[in-house]
Image (cartoon, rainbow, N blue to C red):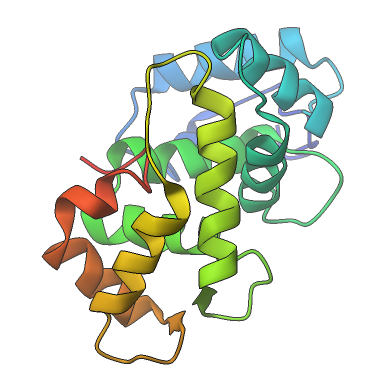
Length: 184
């Protein structure tokens, strides 16, 4: 148990302390399921894409999944391990609104420069539309919606800082909601 491999074959109580808002039994079950599905303890980009293709069989999740994979993959390796998946899941399902917003900001910040450009926001929002539009009845003009969001930003730099993003989420809830899949 002292030797912790990336496959997490022996998920133990010490690991559960990192994720206290989940029951130990659930964590052990999820770990077991993850290891059964990915015996080497690693989920690839292709694995994640296959999973999303099952949820959105008529859409094109490729671009969305690529960005999601890179956001979850905090180790910047070529795979997602169980801990990375749990961190993302923990933030998005049990995190505070601030934590969720921070994670979503990182998701939109494709080049990790600490700001979100209009182009980055359009790319991500369009990837979501590509994924869901053939499965769900969605009729949104992504570029127009994002132009409207940028017009409301007081800073007028053409970029959203995290502070701008946070303010936007508070002021323009309905418009902002279409850009997120994870906020309450």
